[in-house]
Amino acid sequence: MLESRFQEELEAQERFYGISISACINSTPLISSR
Image (tube, rainbow, N blue to C red; front, side):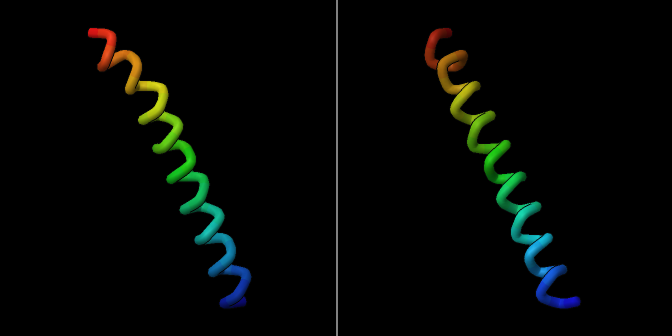
């Protein structure tokens, strides 16, 4: 139970960070172009 829950949390964090990192990379050109 604990191990599976821990894995799910890690996966959720990876997804969140992956999205935030991609968002930062995508928004950077817009900021620099202005």
